[in-house]
Image 1 (cartoon, one colour):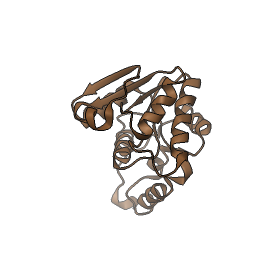
Image 2 (cartoon, rainbow, N blue to C red):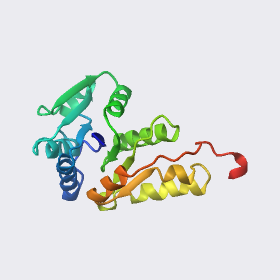
Image 3 (cartoon, rainbow, N blue to C red):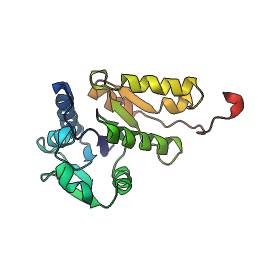
Length: 193
């Protein structure tokens, strides 16, 4: 893994642990000689993870749509800041530049980005590892929901297991390095439900 995309909130969250873990992830990426690709902003956890990379001598590439440049406030101290026109172009460019994805805590945008990458993987458009750093149990309820999707016949268990989960950065990165994409069709036939 040469570069990883990190999706996360443009807010800091209500507890200091979110900021602490975002910075620690950035620092760990540098230690592992892995570059960061992220949304390009200085705000919230986005800025914290980038600072964790840049303050420790790593590579951080931001991808930011023009219309968000003023709202999310572009990070000025990155290795590179790529400006694009749309949110879709942003995700496409981030995917092109990286070898996998980690989601930290965040809101709607973080979930949308995470699930688009999961959908692309499920459809066979890429075979990259996709992970969530489950800081302080942040993603516990979402993980329960994915089990409900399996139980109700809307998601194959093999596709559910594509999502790599851990609350420890070192363990999460090790799982990502050892990831092998499942070889199953996305579609569930009526007789399998």
